[in-house]
Length: 172
Image (cartoon, rainbow, N blue to C red):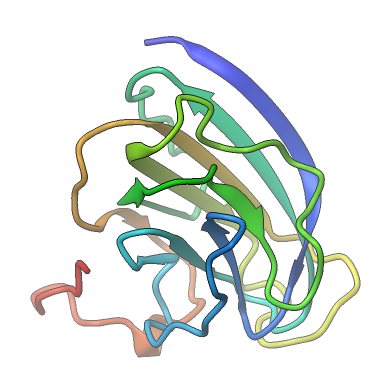
């Protein structure tokens, strides 16, 4: 396993508690899975933030295989599969131009795994701020498509909206 590239942090605009990892020409949409760190559509990843509107710091790591799990400094960690069909996967915003980050899938179309890390989602929950203290790290590598896997869930953001631990989780 080798780290291919590391980028960021880049300030990323948030609106409606979300931003995306998706192809440039995909349509934006608002997900219905509040409370989770990420939700998947099969072709994209929706990232759910604590702030309602503002900017968060986003870092990217591109790997050639699954990286070691080092979750100690993160409050939330989850993995999800994504199938890139034609264009590159990029970080996208709902109401603004994408941040200054490179494409996330330099190996081209195919299946990938995205591990999302977050901290600071509770600090300004549901507020509009110019620059928040929320930080996100996305690690991405080529891998067969797989369902959502929650690895760590310790912040309070969306706790009341999450499914109980013993309930089935949506994985599409």
